[in-house]
Amino acid sequence: MIARNIESHLHTLLSHFPCVAITGVRQCGKTTLLNKLPGDWQHFDMENGTDRQQILADTDLFFRLHPEKITIDEAQRAPELFPALRVAIDRKRSQKGRFVLTGSSSPELIRNLSESLAGRIATIKLSPFSLAEAWQLPPAPIYSLIAQRSKPTELLATVKPRLTLAQIQSYWFQGGYPEPWLSNDDSFRQLWHRHYLDTYMYQDIAPLFPNLNQDRYRQLIQMLSHLSGSILNYADIARTLGVSQPTARDYLHIAHHTFIWRHLPAWSQSKHKQLVKHPKGYLRDSGLLHRLLHLNEGSMLATHPQLGHSWEGMIIENLLRNLDQMGIPYQAYHYRTRGGAEIDLILEGDFGLLPVEIKYTQKADKRSLRSLNEFIKTHDCPYGLIINNEEKPRMLDERILSVPAACL
Image 1: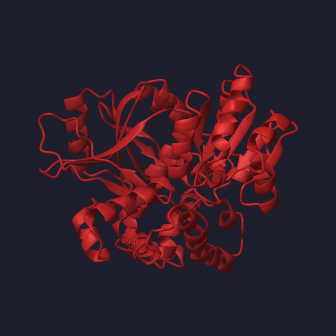
Image 2 (image 1 turned 45 degrees about the horizontal axis):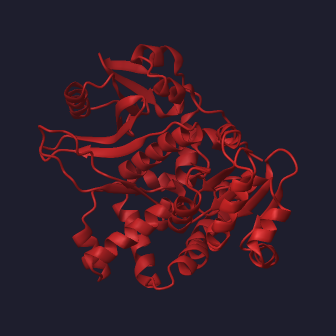
């Protein structure tokens, strides 16, 4: 069993809140994480008929009989339990670490949490394995250094490669879903990814959105494999699907909030630039992306037109997954001007403003440096990063640090 780097953050939240909710895509390891909680926790699953009946027969009585150390898996399937849970928490409001909920479909779960449990609950996001977790490594020091507002010279002195190119390539192609990653059977991995979308459609989408046109939505997911890493045009998506623009927006909203798709809004706070305001996005797992693109061997990536976008999405996901694992709050954007300047990722948080450019190549081109330098000077950023496949970190400019993906 591979350790999850979010465990420390989970235990911290349980020491401060009566209830913690773990959200994340189906099959990313939420139930396994629940089973690793220390002590005598009782586990209930709302997809199990017996557990569901036991809880919903009389929710108030259930929580009186089970006042603490209770986990409830797939809690979004039973919205009626949330008011009773609020009452149970308020009976012993000062007692921490009593309940843990999970949900693989965020819209319904988050709505219930915000309406019933505001101020009583903390929420964390669990994703499939990060690059570090897949190879059983702790979080890289770069993330804590970013959070501590360290200078680029400190990053340069501390951040070192931890992985080989072969390890990175293997993870990039396979993705981070635990079950296929832990299997050595390539046939099983292909079959697992192929059938995963069916499970997602039938167990998450169909129950939560019964009026959704599933054929059109499945078509959208396939379309997103070709749009991953691109600026989104809602009119074009709507026209291709044969739906209205509001419906296309709703479909993308569902994809983002059920953790299949990463919606990345445009940075819009530059006063002196003509900015592209359209969002972009990525399929969150590179392995699922490659299966949807019908890439059955890692070698096929080298000549595929989606290579750059796939690499970019994988690196962005790893950066954000690690920040989530360490409980470092952030907002993520992309940046593009009408003049052609672009930056793949803009991170904003207590650590300040951090522009990040991502390249599959070993060396950064001059255009990337120019866009980063311009953004850094305009917004007075401490520094910017280029994530690429260099052999070791190095300063490319006074305030631009090149960091190999092997350091993540």
